[in-house]
Image 1 (cartoon, rainbow, N blue to C red):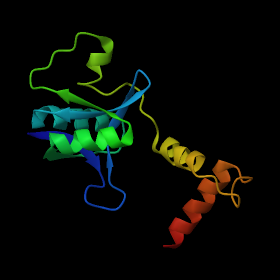
Image 2 (image 1 turned 60 degrees about the vertical axis):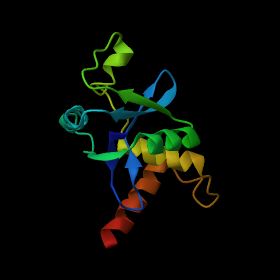
Image 3 (image 1 turned 120 degrees about the vertical axis):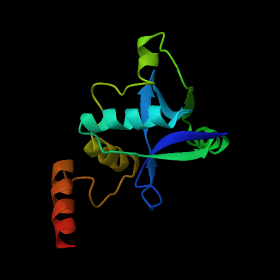
Image 4 (image 1 turned 180 degrees about the horizontal axis):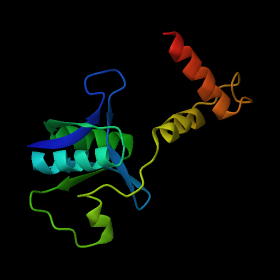
Length: 135
């Protein structure tokens, strides 16, 4: 069965999938209805969040990916009606999203680099920005 998911940088090396933190778990949403996925994407855009591209992918493939990554896959069926505040997040993103910069900091926390570990993260960000500007 094909489901609709939200991808960032689709088809590129840095491809990522949109996820939520619910009850301490990372959750990937799989929408049965493309319009629901596109509406969710539009709500992210309205919050100045990076805009994901809605893609059709086999449900089994997403569930396997989630299982291997330690994530939880949530299927949002067409006509879904939330029964709790947590369920509401399956139809509309939280009012506050994790900043892209926070993702970068998470990456730095996971990968300790003895060369940069004594440099404050704001200085690393500034150095990175200057290097990117050179390109």
